[in-house]
Length: 220
Ligand SMILES: Nc1ncnc2c1ncn2[C@@H]1O[C@H](COP(=O)(O)OP(=O)(O)OP(=O)(O)O)[C@@H](O)[C@H]1O
Image 1 (cartoon, helix red, strand yellow):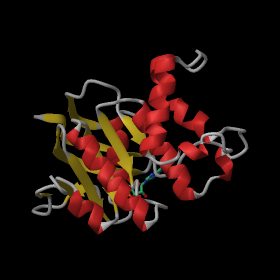
Image 2: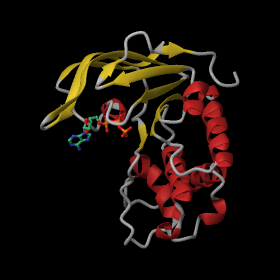
Image 3: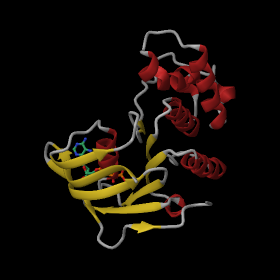
Image 4: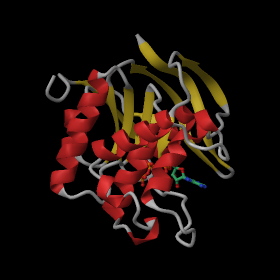
């Protein structure tokens, strides 16, 4: 069973074709790692899977139930906004709640649980622009979890995390996968790639022939 299947898919930018006929399936309830050199097309593929970047050819078949939760490599909360970490995580509820509605008790519970899962509860009232890169990354992951999507798309989620937090991240991804979520993440970390259930290798916008692999998963 696949949460997503892309067939002969093309996508790019004004002057550059970034994905050139990608055919791939992303199993439901499993972790798929996208691997490849800088510029090979991993981020573009994640954005296409998230539905935020247009395709110029091919098809995408979707079997996930909710709107995907996407955590980008470069985040878009302006440093000048006086937001707390709690505010940033709460944005994950906007889809359900709308931007201007008050958070419900359920929203607050979900936000609290997601912050706890990412070990950032103690940062809830801290100004977001005062956090370290790794703390911000954890806040964005908590925001994605707060969306309660069944499809989590992460662009190099390990960026800025120390070794201990990376281990917590891979444990968390395992837990989420075991809860039934479909996870696709781009990574440059060989250990993160190795722990995934499946790996898709990209080279210059193409799937590298013979390099896409299925492993035993991490610690299943
Ligand atoms: N906004 C953009 N405008 C024009 N070209 C872009 C843009 N973003 C990416 N590209 C180009 O598209 C191709 C794929 O880029 P993409 O960011 O998807 O690669 P990536 O594998 O995620 O790279 P990295 O590992 O460095 O994050 C590259 O040639 C890149 O230069």
